[in-house]
Amino acid sequence: MTNQLQSAVEDGPSKADVRERRSRLLSFMTAYYLQVTTAVVIVGLSVFVPDFGNRANLQNIATQASFAGLVACGMTLLITAGLFDLSVAGIIAVVGVVTAKVLPGTTIGMALLLAIVVGIFLGLTNGVVVTKLRIPPFISTFGMLNIYLAVAFIATGGQVIPIDSYYFQQLGTATVAGAPLVFIAFSVVAAASYCLLYRTYFGRRLRAIGSSEQAARMAGIPVDRVKILAFGLTGLFTAIAAIGLSALLSSSGGTMAKDMELNAIAITVVGGTALRGGRGTLLGTFTAAIFITVIANALNLLDVSSYVQNIVTGFILIAALIVGSVRK
Image (cartoon, rainbow, N blue to C red; front, side):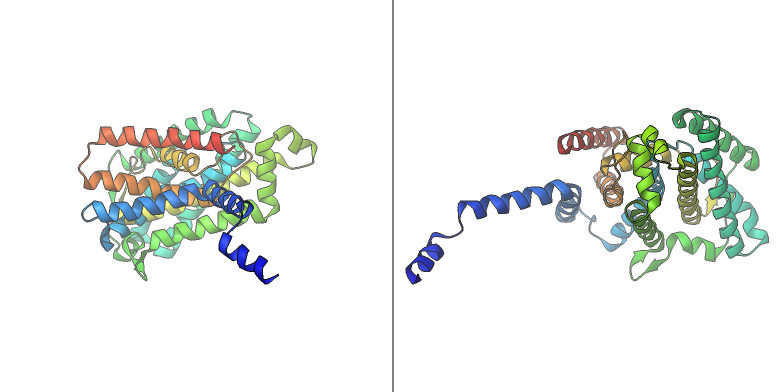
């Protein structure tokens, strides 16, 4: 018996053990490839790109990732249910303009409350248009985008409205234990969205609708109500992004969130959420927001032209779709 144990120790792990370890490693890399890639890229850029690893730059990355990331959390819920919302840039513009206009005559708390209410209302409006008028979400929300942007431009006369409140500006620039306040808000929203999607009946219904809306209806799921609520949550998250962006810019206007809808969809897709619906990943969305911002920041530090940056972003998006297809 002693000789057998000694022989086993000398021979090392068996082939079965090696295969099992490789299988576990492969499963881990398949599940968390984006997180591992992001960590490796950040470490590599910190070593080879001057000023990338500076505390101020890392805080800037966290701040910039938060705005599109907040919107992408809502977009993840929608796409999981087989929906889209192309009006988020318009919602940000309207919420930002409303906030800037009411701030001089009211308290910051009331302005924030009004901003949240307006964001939720606009999101619910999108949901009602999609579900009750039976207009495809891609077309209906694109139409609502133009309406919201027009409202913002009319309200401002095409001008940018400055925000002079110091304490409101702190919402976009303040840090807590070194972390930007808007990044903390993004993290909380991402965690709450994860719980909604995977720990509640609402999330289960979203995934069921995205997998097969007809089957969901036959199962007794109130499809229209769930869709409207998902749009309302997207409006809420978008309003939070609008507050942070207005505070950071110290102003609001119709063009303050140009192309935000495309950025949010790109983050959602890169994060691993299936465009066909039925499957979403909030951890992937959270990581993708950071990953894409890290790449853009590094390219800026390296003084790469915006055209080349667009090419890189396009390749990242296509690569994400290919990886998602291979994983499936």
